[in-house]
Image (cartoon, rainbow, N blue to C red; front, side, top):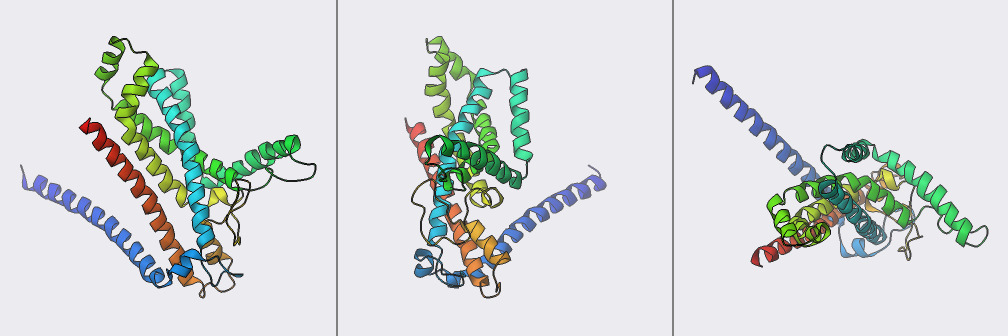
Amino acid sequence: MTLRKKLLGKGIVFFTALCAFAIIGLVVFIMGTIIAGGHSHVTWKFLTLAPTEGMTSGGIFPAIIGTFFLVVIMSIVGVPVGTITAIYLAEYTKKGSFIAKTIRFAVNTLAGIPSIVFGLFGLGFFIQFLGANLDKAFAPAGQLVWGQPCLLWAALTMALLTLPVVIVSVEEAIRTVPKELREASLALGATRWETIVRIVLPNSVTGILTGGILAVSRGAGEVAPILFTGAAYFLPHLPGKLQDQFMELGYHVYIMSTQSTNVDETKGIQFATTLVLLLLTFCLNFSAVFLRYWMRKRALSS
């Protein structure tokens, strides 16, 4: 090996390591800035009280609960639909078929659409079309029940946003299941559906949970899709039903940083709210990771 190749190899190693450590340093800097700016404001009262008028004092409890409900409903809707679509792509269609190509094109298109477009779609389809027609059919005359921004429409909009993430990750997990296991199951007399339920899904459940984790990570911090579909600027009480509007941590930060009459006065609350949002996301992700680890350990032991 010539001296030039050795220097080139060492240079590539140095450059790639520099990029990796730069990313780590950027993450540490961002997290350090958020923690330094918000840790003094994260108190028990801040976590358990509702905000006051003007939102320069009080707490963020309604925003925490609203974010939690949003993520949970989004996951309940999005993960099963994404998993079923991935099963169809991996098990019931040929990889190069027209149907499979069409579905993947649609999924890739959804993944590339800006999040604000999802918000406008949610406003037009869920609220003005679906909700308005539900009110015409079932609600008293002149009363808005479903034809207005609410928790359900915001969660469904967010589920659409995270759907491509779930489909891609679950399909890849299903394809990692060895073909021999499927053939052995079919040879023993099982149907294709029984093979999927008893062989494929148990061996790819960790990938399904990974898709759920990625969906939570993507959806918890998004603000644009819920701007028009359910998030409220100031709502000091908790949502009691799916038709209610709600406060959300990311939207709360956005409002305080852009609409507040005194941004400097609320800067500590902004940092504290961001810190709580990150901690809530980490807790949800950790719960999914722990569940994935437990299920994987259980499958290996059995």
